[in-house]
Image (cartoon, rainbow, N blue to C red; front, side, top):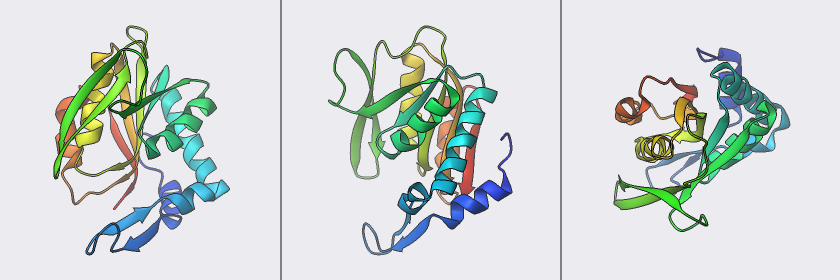
Length: 183
């Protein structure tokens, strides 16, 4: 999956529902719940993510709270790899690395457990949407702070009208950034 598979993109996109004016007027929300509820589409997505993890030599798959968990955990299982969650502040026990980042209105903090990775492990980061890139950029910084090497990033859907891809470039350290559906 070094280049997007048009048949896979078509299948996935056909199961993503547009919800106008959610969560506020003027916003067109892309709902992935119908995709997750469809065994064919969800299975195809899981197999594609697992295959990409194997192709990139990942030893773990990282999912970002919350919908990234739903995509990354089954992909990790299908690839025979471990899964590591990156969570919002205060949700993980024990010692954590933390990274704060700016949102459109305010800021947020993400965390990963300090012992989540063995030194030099290669990880694939998976999330549902690449929008402005803040959440994924903070997660990539956490992965590297925790001692892992970034194998790549795969997102289900990229909102190409937002600057997420450009914002992530300095955080990738040469690792690939791939999207399955571009909106």
